Amino acid sequence: MKRSRKYLSLREMLHQPMLGATICLFCVCMFCQIGSAGEDFVVSQDSVSIVHPGAVIKDAPPDDWTHLVLKSCPIASAGDTDGLSNLDRSLSSSFRTVTLAKVDQRVVDGKREFQLNRVGVGICMPIEGMGDTVISPDTQKELGAGLGFLARTVLSKIYTELAKVHYVCRSDTSAVYDSPVIIRYEGKNREMVIRYALIVNQENGKLITMAWLIEVDSRGKYTDVAGDVQWLPENQILRCDLYVDGNEYTLGIPSKRAFACVGIPPGKVKFGLPKNLTAIACSPKLSEADAETLVSSLRRVIAFHEKKQAN
Image (cartoon, rainbow, N blue to C red; front, side):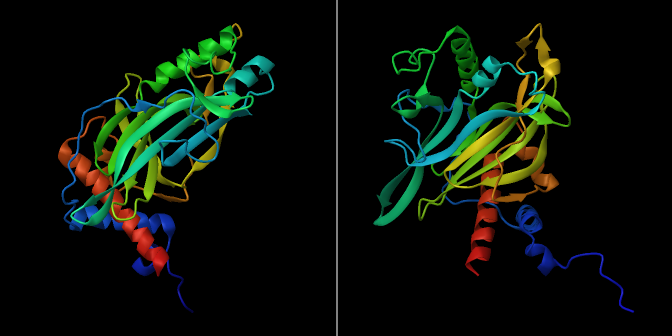
């Protein structure tokens, strides 16, 4: 009688989307000389640009941008939704976050190359006759949003959080940045961080976006990567389900943690990070060498999957 095998062979593992990527990344970190020739990194924690109010965000990037990275449309759909007032339900779904990128083309020594010019984040909402339009507390009235007092208060608070989105590192062809988030994690609505990595293929201009969740302790210190890295689809327009925690209400007033995303944006591919890369992936600050290691490792995962798809 044949004994059933308990473990997958390396060949079989490489054909499992998550395992294959993890093994590839492990091999990169352990055995490969990591680097991208000529890629210089800036590691200052500058704020990510705010998208100019008035830009209309439909299912494609507006003028002067080349990529709609992500548009997140929230809806309160989980948790204590039965006791939710119509006003709170409406306010929780009124504002949509958007991320845009611009990739430029240039010719160097007769060879066409692409680079990441800039990244921008913003808040948009549906405005009659225009569609989803980027607004700010100072411009919402003239753009036709006509928000009431409570809606203006909510928008101002969201804008304060938006200003906290900042770069961790960037180069001519990549950007890694952190975005604060309230997320449902381990049975609680918690303040955490989503780290995004935008990576441009210098030869064809294709933009890859990856995201992962970082745990944060009560003092705001980054502690660990939580879960897998998500390789996001292009031009992702996402329904963001919100978890309502009734315990975060006091006398009918919601706290900052009353509404939480049920998860980070889902990817078309997901993979875990090896332990020797996790410390870099969740570090609040990176050295230039760390930035190069992180981005180069992700580039090799991209190359691994693209080669696999081509075969």
